[in-house]
Image 1 (cartoon, one colour):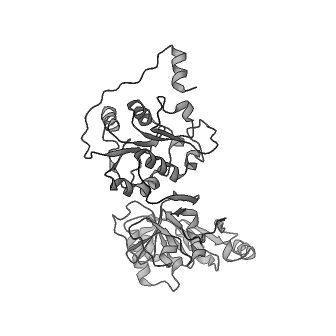
Image 2 (cartoon, one colour):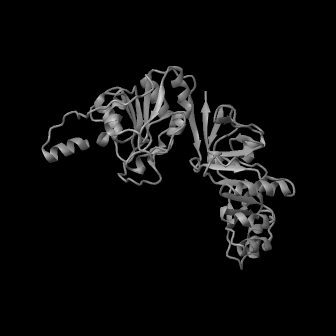
Image 3 (tube, rainbow, N blue to C red):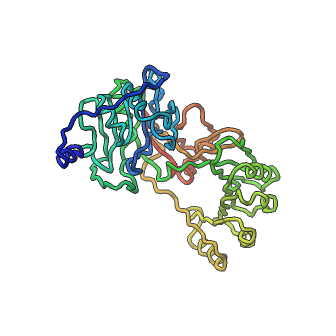
Length: 395
């Protein structure tokens, strides 16, 4: 039974369509759809709306549609949209929704308001089911998506979130169907890395970022990618970045620490890769100087015997060694039509790359925020980027 019917029976009330006063709000577009990526419960919030937009915004623009994001001022801002979150009251929001050609969102007030207005919608459900909490006045222009074999948990803090099992292409195809958009390209999700939602920013030591570029984003400075002795330009680049932002330093050799001490508070972590060698004095010095540090060991590049040897060498120190395993993959990544997206960005030579593989292949981002998986350095992609990637087939 729907919640509305339950309330009506419990209170003896009649069910009628709701009425809300709408207040004009100047929307600068004649044709638009709305999207809301928030809800009163975190467990209801779909994490892949940005990917949906990335794949569909160009098709929408070709037929004159814009995308308006509604919600509260604290909602994560999406790209390729017109931002109105936190700028309207409920009456103005009602005006915007009633004039929308389509609404896309989690189970929230906007879904039910559009339902009452008869506006086409794509609603995403998992914590509860559409039968219980979905649009009450149903019609064929309203699509409710759920994960396969849904068994609602009714847990507002569900973890892991079942709603994220809804395929990106299911949302995209539903939007296209309701707006009668002919597909210029179709995608099929092949793999979603467990760390795909993690935003990672990395660079080589000599690359200096503008203070306002990726502002407030932690920067990983990768000394371990330098196949040479560390030079003065590397330290100078690191110091200039530390002067304006927080950094994590990754190295597989001891560093000269004195130039960094002035900016010690901006060193969030120093990760020391001890897979092939270890300098115990360097670890002791890091601890003495109060620099947060940890050791990692890539088991796929050495042996368990060597790992035990490293542990014995630092047995009297407070540090532990984190074992890094090779990510498991049960798909053939060499397939012709496989592409990937990632939130793990690499900056080098004033160019932006989608992860380490793209940097090694010298293929910076050009227009799209996705790239074809290359067989060149494929092993490096699996080791370093796979867990942070969304892999899809594109036709």
